[in-house]
Image (cartoon, rainbow over all chains, first blue to last red; front, side):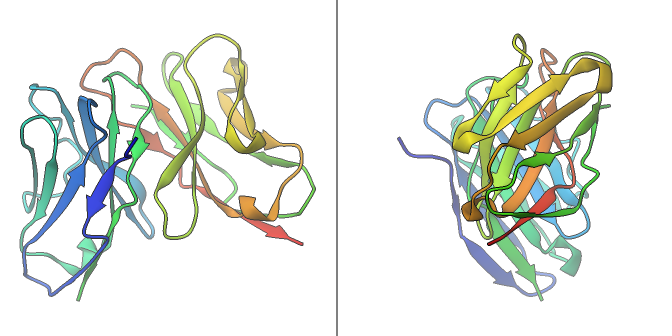
Length: 114
Length: 116
């Protein structure tokens, strides 16, 4: 079956522009996660969706970052007014259950802010 | 809050040699434990996981890991490394049964280099 897919694979943008990153989780997975992988910071949790519950946004670094999940499936991570420090690989993962079940990762979107 | 320490940033081994990557965690109870591997330009692939039961866990690609509660460790091992194992390895901890607190906390990773 298909794994987690993310688009675009790479994104180059200018400082101050907004970007949208997309994640298609594995069909039937109820939980969806966004992580950021950057030099010097490792892998950081950003946000987590589980079914119809309110998302856990505790990892979002600023109010420029937001995410939504439509219809319990596809998710979009939006970064407004991008800064150079936003340059990183943004990884999406999904899992069939909450509470520590195995998370399956997509290939990531590599974002470069010039 | 949970935390993970991978004390080795970079390890070099010869092909055919044995490998052990260290992982120590901090958590108030028994967590869920994972090892992921990331090849250059790729996403994270799950190698193995521990939730409960037998403390020696077998994974893909010939890897295994042992959960040692007394040492708060979950070290990854492979008896004979192949050149294709060169990659970055991440240990991660998740909190079981905590509902919304299902995010993974990752270690900083260990980069494995394999010499021929």
